[in-house]
Image 1 (cartoon, rainbow, N blue to C red):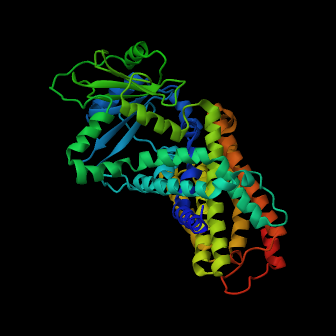
Image 2: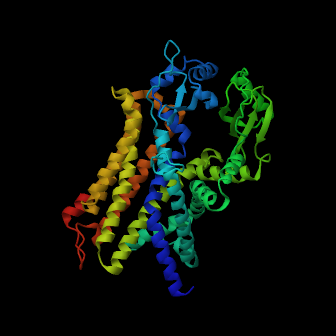
Amino acid sequence: MKADRLRRFIDLHAWLGMASGLALFVAFFAGALNVFHHELHHWQTPQATEAASQDAIDGQALLARVTDQYPDARKRLFFLPEEDPAVMWFQSSDAGAGEWLTAHATDFDEAGKYVEKPRSALADFINQLHYQLAIPGGGLPINLGMTFMGLISILYGAALFTGLVIHWPKLRKEFFALKHEGNMRRYWKNMHNLIGVVSLPFHLIMSVTGAAMGAFTLVAVVLGTLVFGPQLRGVIEEETAVWPPVQSQGESVAMVPMADYLSAAADALPEMSVDWVEIRGYGDAAGWVDVAGSVPGYVGHHAHVVLDPAMGVLNVIAPGQRSLNFDSFSPVYSLHFGDYGGMLVKWLYFAMGLLGALLFVSGNVLWCERRSDRQGPSRGSAFLLRLTLGLCFGVVIGVACSFLVSKGLPYTPWAAWVATAERAICGVVVVLLVLWSLRASPLRFSGLMLTVAPLCYLAVPLLQVVLEGGHALEADNLLINGLLLLVASSLWVVRRQFRKRVRLAEPHPLWVGKVTQGHPKHLTETEREAVS
């Protein structure tokens, strides 16, 4: 490849990586934790709540109470057949808006009246942080955060392509080049390249599936407006729905027990394990029940058995029994969330997520240093370096604080604010650390944050052990606590490598004090001790 063309690819790769790097760091770090979303739901539930659920009403009585007290739930509801059954439905309001409500079997008083109890929403917050950066929807027809991440995923894919073009001719040489030989900057560059090469298939999967899910709504809106017209929306809804919407004729029918629907679904698709049940038109003769779950052994493992109120089978969507549309979308979701291959694949996705987060941080840092070497220290490079450090450390420590609040606040008089506090504390920490990083010495700031961050993640399992004792050793809780200890260990390894670089190599001028033109400032003994 000609030198000028290669130079254009290098510049394009750098700018695309910088434009998407910070958002992708948040998505990858939160996504690594979100791999264990189901287990995190159990972890966030206080021990007292789980104990109370053992004497609660069963799922059938829960359905009856919710649909009797809330007519909106009859239009559409989701039933979760777990140890502590739950029902979710959209409750409209007089103002024209509304909200999704969740009722557990423990959420009813002695008179049978539903009383919404404050519950931790940590798992949902981590999920939203992953796929939409926790950006509020704002009541718009498209999800702003998810659409933004879809566009970022497109830039991300372009950066991967240009990076592959750049490194392909020297791939074998760089794959075995992880040694510093006294040059720690070269060592960190080789580490960045090695992580990128090893995890390239994973990143290709994330970029394609992220773009497919995030940009789908935007593409549909644009095509519907400019090309196909308003009829496109109806076509999309028809092709993506498991069964057409309910066309009620006003005829009521008695619903059979939920166990019978589950049994009928098992007869129609014996290999399916049930995850949830969606009911449209509860008690309406034109309604239907969608028993949704998974069929093991397939990447596109999602399955649906649609039944009428009398348990007649209306539709079966499963591997080998579905349309091209469902055959296309099911693998997209499975490949993105890593829920198709058991626990081994989940742990692999977790590791790749953390390595991906490190890849984006190191890419931004190397770019800032390289640009400064070429053009001299500048305020732009210094600002971007400090913003990268502040945002990344803010997210890492902010998420740890959310975990601490989720586990500690339910045992205080402020338990009613737990869901709000989980989000608020993360946002406050991110803002404060970004502001601090813009004024502090990047070297000292990074040294301090790399000491605080592992301790924050170490404190979370210790807090649960103190508050809940042996409950912390139950299967899902033990898994999440082990995951947090691995995050703490990973941060401690990064800290050791960072301190090693400070000891063996003079820091780049961008890392020390204020940005100055000319010769780099040498590291004083006081600054070296502050980092070490």
